[in-house]
Image (cartoon, helix red, strand yellow):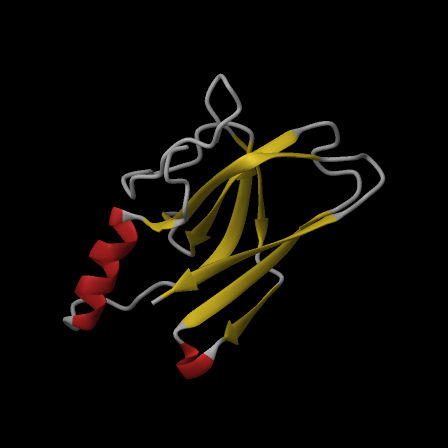
Length: 130
Protein backbone atom coordinates (compact mmCIF):
# COMPACT_ATOMS: atom_id res chain seq x y z
CA UNK A 1 0.00 0.00 0.00
CA UNK A 2 1.18 3.53 -0.79
CA UNK A 3 2.20 5.87 2.02
CA UNK A 4 -0.98 7.80 2.69
CA UNK A 5 0.13 9.49 5.88
CA UNK A 6 -0.86 13.09 6.20
CA UNK A 7 1.65 15.61 4.95
CA UNK A 8 2.41 19.27 5.44
CA UNK A 9 2.35 20.71 1.94
CA UNK A 10 5.25 22.46 0.23
CA UNK A 11 3.24 25.72 0.29
CA UNK A 12 2.89 25.43 4.08
CA UNK A 13 6.61 24.68 4.51
CA UNK A 14 7.52 27.77 2.45
CA UNK A 15 5.22 29.89 4.62
CA UNK A 16 6.74 28.44 7.82
CA UNK A 17 10.24 29.22 6.57
CA UNK A 18 9.32 32.82 5.66
CA UNK A 19 7.49 33.33 8.96
CA UNK A 20 10.43 32.02 10.98
CA UNK A 21 12.70 34.42 9.08
CA UNK A 22 10.39 37.31 9.99
CA UNK A 23 9.38 38.04 6.40
CA UNK A 24 5.68 37.26 6.86
CA UNK A 25 3.04 36.39 9.45
CA UNK A 26 1.78 32.85 9.33
CA UNK A 27 -1.92 32.68 8.42
CA UNK A 28 -4.18 30.62 10.70
CA UNK A 29 -5.66 27.30 9.65
CA UNK A 30 -9.35 28.04 9.26
CA UNK A 31 -11.04 25.44 7.03
CA UNK A 32 -11.29 21.68 6.51
CA UNK A 33 -12.12 20.03 3.20
CA UNK A 34 -13.37 16.58 2.25
CA UNK A 35 -13.24 14.76 -1.07
CA UNK A 36 -13.68 11.38 -2.72
CA UNK A 37 -10.58 11.34 -4.93
CA UNK A 38 -8.05 9.96 -2.46
CA UNK A 39 -7.99 6.34 -3.66
CA UNK A 40 -6.85 4.51 -6.77
CA UNK A 41 -8.99 2.23 -8.97
CA UNK A 42 -8.55 -0.67 -6.51
CA UNK A 43 -9.69 1.44 -3.56
CA UNK A 44 -6.23 1.86 -2.03
CA UNK A 45 -5.25 5.32 -0.71
CA UNK A 46 -3.11 7.38 -3.07
CA UNK A 47 0.41 8.24 -1.92
CA UNK A 48 0.80 11.74 -0.52
CA UNK A 49 3.74 13.83 -1.71
CA UNK A 50 3.43 17.23 -0.07
CA UNK A 51 3.15 18.83 -3.51
CA UNK A 52 -0.66 18.76 -3.42
CA UNK A 53 -2.30 22.18 -3.83
CA UNK A 54 -5.88 20.93 -3.49
CA UNK A 55 -7.87 17.77 -3.05
CA UNK A 56 -8.13 15.49 -6.07
CA UNK A 57 -11.94 15.71 -6.01
CA UNK A 58 -13.03 18.24 -3.41
CA UNK A 59 -16.67 17.91 -2.35
CA UNK A 60 -17.07 20.32 0.56
CA UNK A 61 -15.10 22.90 2.56
CA UNK A 62 -16.22 24.08 6.00
CA UNK A 63 -14.88 26.27 8.78
CA UNK A 64 -12.89 24.58 11.54
CA UNK A 65 -15.13 24.22 14.61
CA UNK A 66 -12.41 23.91 17.21
CA UNK A 67 -8.78 23.10 17.83
CA UNK A 68 -6.82 21.75 20.76
CA UNK A 69 -3.20 21.04 21.58
CA UNK A 70 -2.56 17.37 22.23
CA UNK A 71 0.41 15.52 23.68
CA UNK A 72 3.32 16.96 25.58
CA UNK A 73 4.91 20.26 24.70
CA UNK A 74 2.14 21.68 22.47
CA UNK A 75 3.76 20.48 19.24
CA UNK A 76 0.59 18.86 17.87
CA UNK A 77 -2.63 20.72 17.15
CA UNK A 78 -5.85 18.81 16.43
CA UNK A 79 -8.44 20.57 14.24
CA UNK A 80 -12.07 19.41 14.28
CA UNK A 81 -14.99 19.86 11.89
CA UNK A 82 -18.25 17.98 11.40
CA UNK A 83 -20.07 16.70 8.36
CA UNK A 84 -23.68 17.18 9.42
CA UNK A 85 -26.21 14.40 8.83
CA UNK A 86 -27.47 15.86 5.55
CA UNK A 87 -24.04 16.81 4.15
CA UNK A 88 -22.39 14.57 1.52
CA UNK A 89 -24.99 11.81 1.97
CA UNK A 90 -24.09 8.72 -0.06
CA UNK A 91 -20.52 9.86 -0.73
CA UNK A 92 -17.43 7.82 0.06
CA UNK A 93 -14.94 10.20 1.64
CA UNK A 94 -11.29 9.26 0.99
CA UNK A 95 -9.32 12.49 1.34
CA UNK A 96 -9.25 15.56 3.53
CA UNK A 97 -7.23 18.68 3.92
CA UNK A 98 -6.68 21.81 5.96
CA UNK A 99 -6.70 25.27 4.38
CA UNK A 100 -5.26 28.45 5.84
CA UNK A 101 -6.97 31.84 5.87
CA UNK A 102 -5.27 32.72 2.56
CA UNK A 103 -6.94 29.72 0.88
CA UNK A 104 -3.81 27.57 0.59
CA UNK A 105 -3.87 23.83 1.29
CA UNK A 106 -1.43 23.34 4.17
CA UNK A 107 -2.07 19.72 5.17
CA UNK A 108 -3.42 16.78 3.17
CA UNK A 109 -4.36 13.17 3.89
CA UNK A 110 -5.75 10.20 1.96
CA UNK A 111 -7.40 7.13 3.50
CA UNK A 112 -9.68 4.18 2.76
CA UNK A 113 -13.21 5.14 1.69
CA UNK A 114 -15.58 6.12 4.51
CA UNK A 115 -19.26 5.92 3.58
CA UNK A 116 -21.49 8.84 4.59
CA UNK A 117 -25.01 7.93 5.71
CA UNK A 118 -27.82 10.46 5.32
CA UNK A 119 -28.88 10.40 8.96
CA UNK A 120 -25.56 10.32 10.81
CA UNK A 121 -23.14 13.23 11.32
CA UNK A 122 -19.41 12.43 11.11
CA UNK A 123 -16.83 14.28 13.19
CA UNK A 124 -13.39 14.56 11.62
CA UNK A 125 -10.13 15.41 13.38
CA UNK A 126 -6.92 16.22 11.58
CA UNK A 127 -3.66 16.79 13.43
CA UNK A 128 -0.81 19.06 12.45
CA UNK A 129 2.38 17.69 14.00
CA UNK A 130 5.61 19.64 14.45
